[in-house]
Image 1: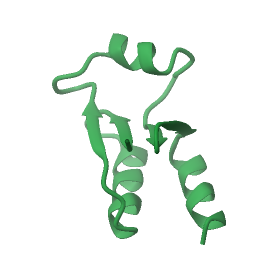
Image 2: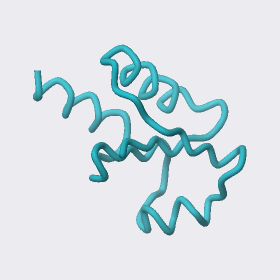
Image 3: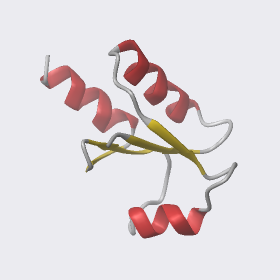
Image 4: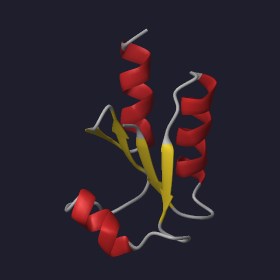
Length: 75
């Protein structure tokens, strides 16, 4: 499962979601501004200090920079 933990008005969150969409990668967005809490994020990623926090195939990738690097190396 692909998950993007995000919040409103987060440019890195928007960039990550746009990158995933441009690659045709489906994901579930878990927005801590709507419907999800920071506590739920910390349960999923105990050391999270920022968003986005991105999981691909159930594995934590990290934030936008790590996502971009991972998708670039897998080309």
